[in-house]
Length: 380
Ligand code: GAL
Image (cartoon, protein in one colour):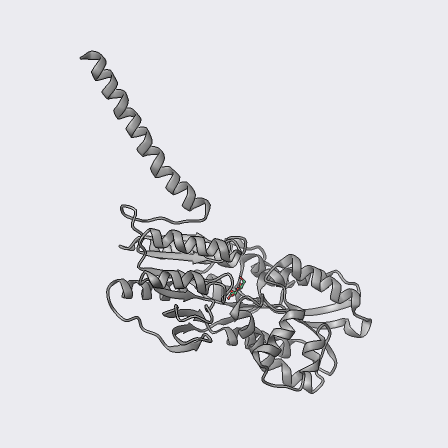
């Protein structure tokens, strides 16, 4: 009897141990991939897939999603694709296996993500493209985004308003990754503003023969935009941006230095490019754009090393995306404000405006709005 008792006690202990290990591995795997798991009993209602944890922009979104989900009755999980479409597909499959009803996804590569969302569609999962559009597939139901053309227009207009008077101002062009549909929209917006000023000689293009050959063309086709991006892309990688800037400045003669204007597509690449131009003895001053209001760039703006950034209040995008998800889970039709042609269909969309931030309005736009704490910056 005693022996039996001992055996059953040991068995129970063993069982407990197995159970304990099960729970933590779940937590460990999802947290190591940056997962926030609020699932109740394993089912996940809303799956969220973000491009990479290696860029501050998407860590901002993760933080804001976590804030937004605290009191949610629905379970969610956030996974990162680490710059890989294969990992992205794997993430979507993982979430499908957890029974999601809604997938919110910012694709690493807008076209390559088609396969992943098509497998979600097969399971009647509602797909919401987040910030970046998924192209050339019917398997996208909704799109929440910022006005990406307005981002580029704000950057272009800023260079026109701040790059000084006179003619022949050297203009260095840089862009995002061609795999990202937004990179085309950003550049299209910048071109809308800059092209007339290039055509009238105010700006001289310093680093792109493709753009130079198209300088008299106000509206560029997707192919023409693609040709320019092919020459000036940073692939959203600060190191690649730095190398490209160094190569451009090494190739440039002094006519293309002095007081210059730089179109940098986002904050990470902007800081890398500014550091290169800032240390070239023949560059007397530069005006450089940015995007995303990353903390490090806000400090650069306060310190006068970056001229501006385009603030995209991620809290709004997260609220819109989760609002849509909850509507769908509640059997309602989400509110949208327009559509985007993704090359296969008109996708119903909700679009948010953007705000230009420079030294003068850092406090009013980012501190007073509670986006950041003043204590996170020096010299404010
Ligand atoms: C874009 C996004 C930007 C930017 C970039 C790099 O699609 O809209 O905010 O940061 O990707 O990840």
